[in-house]
Image 1 (tube, rainbow, N blue to C red):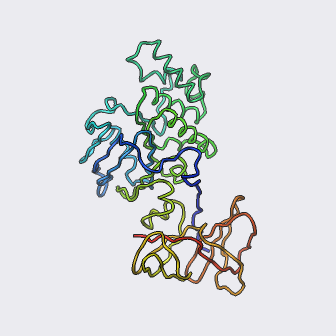
Image 2: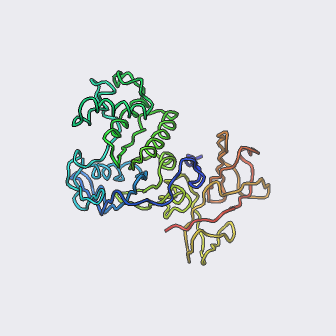
Image 3: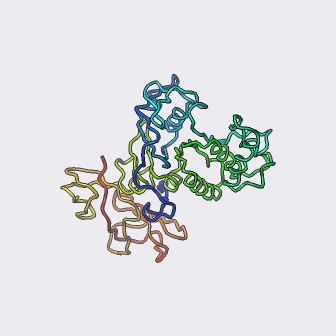
Length: 362
């Protein structure tokens, strides 16, 4: 049997989140206007006419596969790369050609970039050298208390766990009171359990300080869990921007539908708000006409045993809180997610029923 499709990850809908996910951007703090960047060794542009806005106090995730241009975009915002074209506007000021230290923007690197020969508190005070020493110490202690490391100020970075080092890097970035912090894959060096715990701490911390953030990640679960809005990138371009709920429920293309979680792609003939498919006449999330491809999430499909059906289960994965089934129906292979109740063994013949609106793709 061929390799089974990847599994789907879940996220609580935005409107139900206890962390206050914003549905629309607030007053604009950062504007990225048609940024373009090419490198000699690459074919085509690494970043192609990217335009974005980040609101005050908002957390925006740049999400996409390796090589899609998200880190290059972040580095141009931070001043570590010069764009070939376009502008970066921060607080109404053109900062496109300013050096990083003159931008008033914090940056948390993937490897944290802590000074190994300095103590934790000295790492945090490093960017505060213009202040008198007593004020530097007071500010650093305040930041370490904020990130829950007030008792570890005398330690060196190598004496800390990965999660603690990440929080020191964040405290150092926050110490200069930036209105915007850029985070480049900040959780990639942490194990799975610590990654989940730390990213929620970081979100709460940014919200408590009022700082906006731009997060680069290739991890869809991370983007869905953390961001107020997500900008999905592919081959140097932004292909869709929206809240996690909008991106997940209404992907605009097959690439987005499959990169954010997993979708079944069906074909149908649309007429307004309905489409005729092999599963019958189904409602759509938006109007379309003619031949269309459709995205159907695995949890939108009901699975029922039916010995007379030609469709059968060819793969199964039990995950405790739910189960994933791969169902072969003629030439189509469908992925279905159901609750932890009744379990159906491989080989069971089943009937599939789509119980929600399907999404026409462009």
